[in-house]
Length: 293
View 1: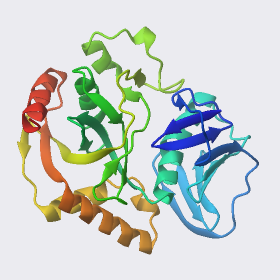
View 2: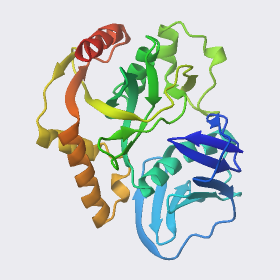
View 3: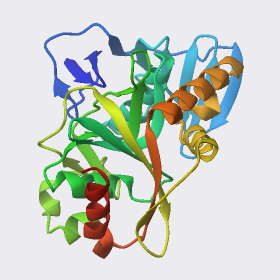
């Protein structure tokens, strides 16, 4: 099947119902094929729920001591047919970490964040797990803003300004936010069979690459407000938010520093203090809207 995501055409042997169909392929391939782990080990990294092994032949994702897939040259994801995973969870690994590593291999700056289209520009939200990136994205899309990406923010720095690529029209949400917004949980599938999160389909999903206009660094606080941050601190925060930082080699660390520095120089960055309460979502939206008039 042919799909599209992050501005790429994808030919995939694995059905990916989360993605939009495409009429052309050729940028990347996702195939099933027996995998032998390369003996030319460079490094191994623990990503909490899975391991990543960096070799001369590419990156391997290991889950519960099983080799799941290999990501090579920014062009191919090879899935071991004997991976042993339930298909919906396999898709989460492929569309999440595997595709993220492939975007990194293609030279993109990949940040742990979400983004929304505000007046033709991408407004991004970065922060730790659980701070509210997806919740804020969902609240804004319910106000008719078009989401660009959830959780994985892929930025191209090849042009005059940083450009954010649209991912796909799914937002991962906890059931409490859906219940708070009076959504019917029965019509929203879980992100995978045993997940506690649900997959919400955004009907007004943005399909074009957009210039990165502003970044909000989300931090928990007792109240909601905007705060300033200097360029040195912003640079550190962007480096910490780089999705693939733990797999970088020495030259990639330098490239990442250069890319993050360009973002800091070209894009307005602020701290958005967030009170972790669903009742404060409207206040957060008002702060964001007022700051982007």
